[in-house]
Image 1 (cartoon, rainbow over the protein chains, first blue to last red):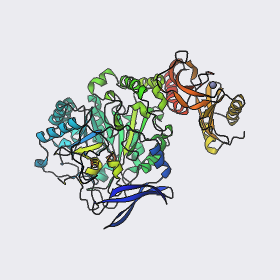
Image 2 (cartoon, rainbow over the protein chains, first blue to last red; image 1 turned 90 degrees about the horizontal axis):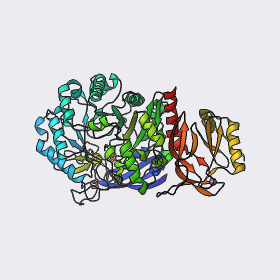
Image 3 (tube, chains in turn purple, brown; image 1 turned 180 degrees about the vertical axis):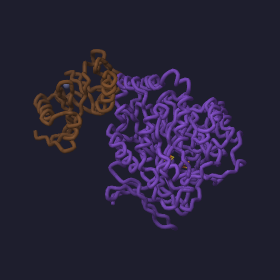
Length: 480
Length: 153
Ligand code: SF4
Ligand code: SF4
Ligand SMILES: [Zn+2]
């Protein structure tokens, strides 16, 4: 056993704050922690200490804090969300849940769903949530409208319009796509209200998968959503929830499918299942980032390798991984690679680079008008910001896309430009490893940039918001 | 110098269409002329050679071939014709072994199938020798070459 560091974590039984250590054994990484009342807990964090370390080495971030904190430091992290003044990272993406209702009843959903309309936040509350984001998040402001299933609300178009009125720069919609696929009039209203992107639940390319989770055949519905978004010029990110014994065998085909629908599909964001709320008891479906990446490598026949996924654009080296790839007739040509190392900070080149990027990635005139996203947006969930509006000294998520390319491409965009002009087919493949109470590390949440906005106007890091003890009792969600 | 070629390195050679004798020759020539890049810690070298329309790079240590990469693009020269001072830190992690100078990260003009564009290279300010990094060759240049081949085919 080789100790790596100490960790601050939580007890799975009582959610009390407990300490532990992170260590390597037989090449794998574990967290072992001890509660004075409930004993000790050991959790596998990574199958490969080599990869784990590589992600750390390749990680570099310029942090910026939120514009304003909303709570005080009182009981200590994670009980003061937030954001409290000790939170280290500005919001990249603010999640606003507009309903708990959902029409799906999925087996793994972490949002608690009811069917009671009267429990939905009213317009005034939502406006307040939007305004809180406007007040606290550095520009540009990015919101994901989530739920429940937001399209359960007939007034969703007005909600989106209100967000734009409040001055939110980027608004995306997290949806299962059913209403969009069946109700053209509703979709048109959402589109004209100014939605910037669709974050589409997409667990597989075969109905078998959808039958397992929802008992419904949904593949045609998902395709139809993409068709409609294509016509409307709205970008789509496919969001597969991945679990063993569910759809892990299909990740390669999902990526291939995404590649075939570029540029409407901008990215695939894999979300490994995590155990909170309604997830099945036992954690047998759980996968680590590395397991997922190895599957991707295998299923894309080595076109996308583990080494092509870097922690760039993530708020913490172990929160996730991103790969940017070009697609051509022969398959994928990944542009990112951990061996290229951390990015060298190049402050004075930066402003130049930024200008060239702003020009370069803005996309065609037509696209630029359609959405503020330009043609190529990094759509990993931590990085929903329009590239055309990037600020240089920003949070992790404001890194220009060229920052995750080989360092020296910042010298000049000749051939890189050429590639970009020649083809419009890029895909961002990303994954974020949400934490559960077993894998929980304070260091990760205090650097988190995905924040759920509560109805009383606070920001709670996503992992804290959905954190439960082993009986499903929440730390934050429904706790107020 | 006895350079070992592991199975992995051998596969790289095959992928790049480079013969074993060829790569060993390139290394031998660089070693005798001193025309190569050396990492700052002195443990790794990059030798460059050409065969027909291919520029071949060998990355190696004293005992082993570590990496092989190639580009079809032809390096024409420094973009703008001469090395002018710049405001940013352009020192690379490599040293020109012959001159003992730190190689600079500068744009060089590269041409392929009639298209010429600048791209980042590693340049010795003293002897003017120009190299391309593995990252650049394997990602950007390779992609661009593929696109051009497809377009011009
Ligand atoms: S997660 Fe952030 S906001 Fe919440 S208590 Fe910890 S430091 Fe404060
Ligand atoms: S939501 Fe969780 S996994 Fe994602 S950045 Fe925040 S702490 Fe990390
Ligand atoms: Zn020299």
